[in-house]
Length: 379
Image 1 (cartoon, one colour):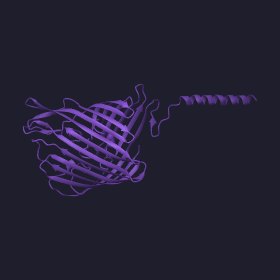
Image 2 (cartoon, helix red, strand yellow; image 1 turned 60 degrees about the vertical axis):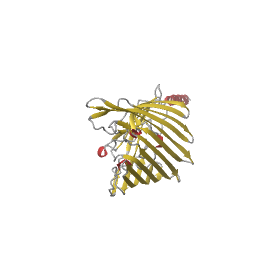
Image 3 (spheres, helix red, strand yellow; image 1 turned 120 degrees about the vertical axis):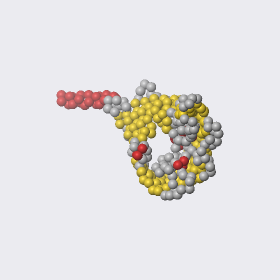
Image 4 (tube, one colour; image 1 turned 45 degrees about the vertical axis):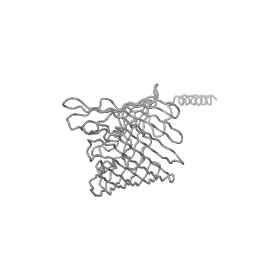
């Protein structure tokens, strides 16, 4: 009898101890995340491997991606075939709870550096669940959620597409809207005056966006303001103000289909797509270049395994009297693909791309490309 009582007491105490241990157990870590021992920080490693097989039916100066600004307009001809895996990328995502909300640190890179070297894409810290962001991320001027899912890495030519170092503040206004304001790293890509000197950026770019998100999709309005200065070695300077706007959004329909759109306009918006923000007037002084870019695309899922994207983009560059006649005045970009998602985290796809470039002197060039891609995501 005594032995039975001892056994019963042991079992009761064991159950109580187990209950106490369970009550002290840490919160369950989501699938795919790991907790750093003896900390409350969890992290996730992810990315993907992607191979691109590219055949160009016409000359183009960007064999790894379809940059229509590099299409020659001298009438040259030629074909080429190329394989590479530079788009493959890796990221690390860290999350830590704190008294000021969740703190997140994120680092991502790909292999589009010189000779296939690893290149930084994103590196930032978010505080208070994204209210504050410091680091390198998609520009606050663009709409990163509607980046067309082309197999091509470059994306449309006149599409706002830039990663900048920044400091951003974001304020949630309602359950479906927010306002974000940021100061961002400027650039000085512009036509250089003939007199010796150097470009300066006296102030960071100022960007702002307002977004409304509903079940049917979202609408975003954003803008920027900036300054560009050229300081002459002999003394004195020339300065221009730059600004622009961006209207973008997405409309969802059927089960997973969507339409995306974007219109950008303003004197200097070229700085958000790697273009010139200013040229020279007839007297050799700086003058903003006013650009207009329009993009529309549709993604349709034929089934759970097959999808198609069709996207078209046109960009028109305003010209200044002092620009060289070989500068770009208009570009067009079109892409159509068929993608087979043969498993949840991998696909193979085929894409046709066509681009045109027209210069100020009205010379033109055309490029046609076929691209076959294989991608496996491991996040």
